[in-house]
Structure formats: structure tokens, C-alpha cells
Length: 131
Image (cartoon, rainbow, N blue to C red; front, side, top):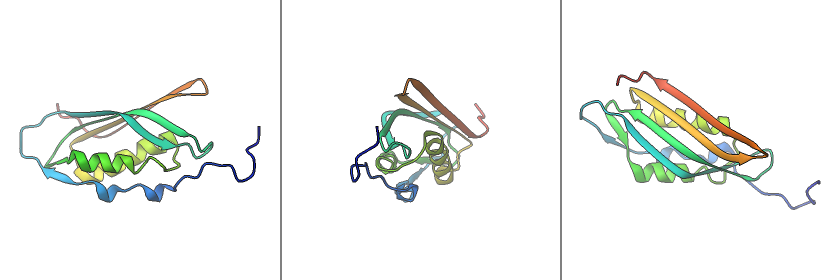
């Protein structure tokens, strides 16, 4: 059914994503595997304008920095109204977090809620896991 004129969901372009929110903390400890998980990741499907909800996993082995968690939270919130395909969101998350921390290893995994009977999981890795 076509959407009535003027009745569409507005969303932001991917330029509204805020990697400048990300901050780091120096890390000088032994190599360790760090894992973050949130079930509250969301963006907007640019095809339908409807929200995409999912679970986000961020796993990494730090070099000299770790991401500050409140800054990560605000960065992730900047996706909320952005129209971005699921695969592109996973790629963008990996690019921004890798640029921010330059870890030895980074894994970004997004597990999206079922849409139209299809489950989507996207996984992207950068670097080499030394552990």
C-alpha cells in the first residue's frame, strides 16, 4: 500500500553519525580481550524509514587506548535517527572505532531483530587477535 502524501518518516543522513563523541583512555596493561554488548542499538532503514533494532557486540584487544564508555554510549545514540543499511552500519562502526582506538584486533557484530521474516547478523573484523 502506498504511503499517503506527506506521511513519511524522516531520518538523518549518515553524516549525522558523531565519531567526534568518541574519547579514549590510555591503556598500559597486559594484552586482554575486551567485550562490550548492548541490546539497545538502533538506526533507521533508509528503504522503509522504519527503525532497525539490534544487539551490538564490540570486542577488541587494545594497543595503547581503550574507548571511554560514556563517549561510546553517546556515539551509539547518534545512530538512532540515521538512515543506514545494516551492513553499512556495521562497517561504519568498525571504521570509527578502529580509527579512535587503533586496537590490535577489533570485532564488530550486529545481530538485528527479525525483519520481514529474515534474520540478519553482520560481522566485521580488523587487525589480528594476538590472544
